[in-house]
Image 1 (cartoon, helix red, strand yellow):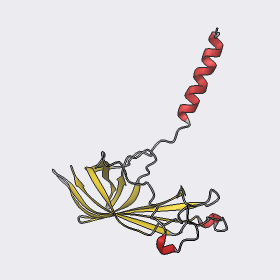
Image 2 (cartoon, rainbow, N blue to C red):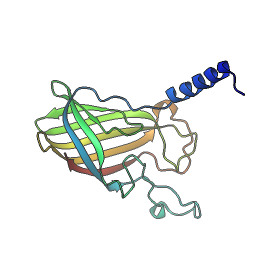
Image 3 (cartoon, one colour):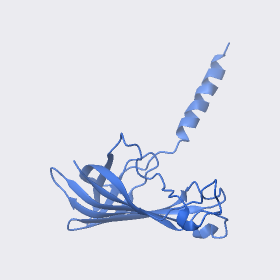
Length: 185
């Protein structure tokens, strides 16, 4: 039998766990465009040695792309929003589970937004490897109804300068993956 005080303690513990979950940052500003975007990997140099053949020459290493954009073929688009944050300043927000707004600018119809964040993970790197991820969205926005976007999303992974001496193992760092991004409302 659980006494009422224990029930309250258990409820408080559950609420505390829920509050500790990572939440995406809010998207600042006034919405310019709500989009459904589709990303296709265009280029990458994120590589890893094959586990069954670790001495393979680098030219034989398989690609190892970060899972920044949805990989599920049943989810061909993902939501994104471009907002005005004052003057020519904008924010690009993708709304993913760990997403952070990318601050940037709007010059005419050209959008450029970029942000570098610590805590990036690339599976082929050792656990001691501390990475940063620089994400950049660059392209043309046609606002209005319907709105459309055509451009690129680039993610570069590099060793965190604050942990430059960390052993990253056999992963190829820095590395960059570029996706073409297209979509609209």
